[in-house]
Image 1: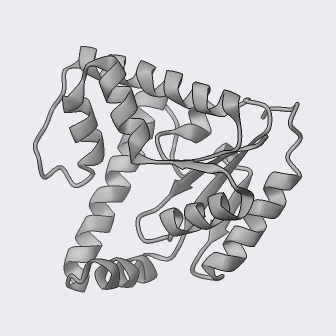
Image 2: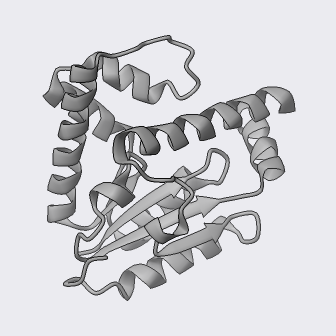
Length: 191
């Protein structure tokens, strides 16, 4: 009854690997629907838009009150999902919200910048310069989100049990490592 959180850089194949892990283990995968559920509970659709808009294209700036209500709702939804177990949570500060939660494996997926640029350009069929800009904006947004709301450095390796560089191994190999690690997480011990 494990819980796996995945923090990923744009272009590090996080969603692909998360899907592979959830398929292999028969776990539910949760990503953007968590944002929607939390926004609905908090009555703060503007926050959901701001969170999804990693590039800042929409110019949505929610109030502090809406942001706080949203964060509390995210925490509640994440804890509910974790208490049921057998879930892969992608993003949304799962590594912080579930720090110390028994039976949880915290994974960080990274890759070299140039490779992430190439992957993003190919996946979205955009020029390399546009892909680089997206990645830089995404990294800044994710870094700022965790720093502002959870007071942690997104890149701090102590937040994770396993850090995998997808520039040095295939998605299948990363999936194998995560599944192996998940099988060895003690279900009664937290961080």
